[in-house]
Length: 424
Ligand code: GDP
Ligand code: MG
Image (tube, rainbow, N blue to C red; front, top):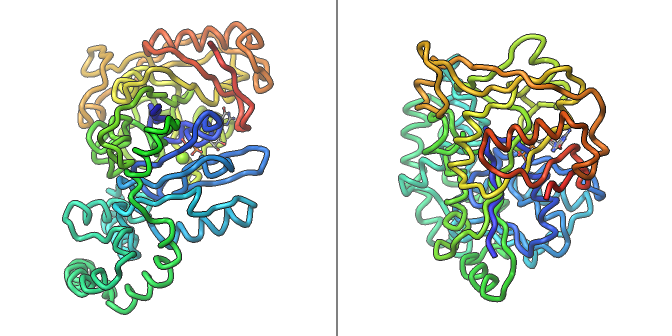
């Protein structure tokens, strides 16, 4: 059985937290896109963990974790992340971690180029996480990247380095006037950070197909959300890979298999890290209050997240992109303590009301249309079943369900593993 867990919004919906909870029903968890620009915060009985490259299933002893071919892997960052988790008592061996031989390696020069370009853009910057993600995906499609499987046969790999270095320096030195990359430092880098990962590298597609035949349950864990998808998101303020569920089997290494279930992770209000149009955005005191209540600071970068009320227009579009069969609604507890809550139910564009999510350029001209619903004044973080919730919180859930035309199956009311409600 194949299930995807994807973000409906702009990312940071709490995917890591939901994967950590739901992975108890799964044998394998795969990441299938993106790199260490992801930041998943997971809190469970073993502690608090921040995951950038490793799937959230790594926190469960019996789950096998896969980094798929759709990913870009910063091998230095991965080595450090593995070391940090081991210090926190997590076991990581080739038995429970498998890295696709077809995943692309993020190099230090990708990170350097990411920073150089953001600095060049100055106030026109994209709000990149500066982890080299756009430059490394660009090289993948230029067919000038290195892949994890090459670490298994470094003779061929090392023979390619000279050409790549020559080509990269055209941009680094010629374009940006920065210090050139050298063949020696690249070989050094592969030796230091690539060699120790060799035992984890394999054909994960073969492994996943065998596992599927044996009846194992496989979960695909996305990074970011639908609105950051390279095709369907708010381009160019998107990530550089597909964040949608339909790409999961491809990016994980099993293009021959079909998803059985798509679970969308949707936040009870809106947050957005970085630049780009964000129609329902709050500013000033209203924003400060919501940001503080939700602790909305990036897990990967520490940046304050932009915040706003729930956006029906964007979320309905996100649900469509993800083909979500059901929703896990997160962070409902953050909305406690308000007489009234606003919901963005439509956009106003040149005096007309629109309900469908428009093309990115048009978004800049859209103004949010807010509706008010009743809030609740009590703490709901201890609620564990629907009947524990105040009527207004239940009404809020039902409102979103109806407006978004998708069933809400789980509602999370706290960051801890058990702080959730199963609605049906
Ligand atoms: P991800 O990138 O989608 O995995 O989400 P992040 O980890 O970046 O952001 C979600 C944040 O909200 C994390 O700090 C979580 O610990 C926290 N969180 C997740 N679910 C809940 C919830 O239901 N209530 C509260 N208060 N915090 C939550
Ligand atoms: Mg995050």
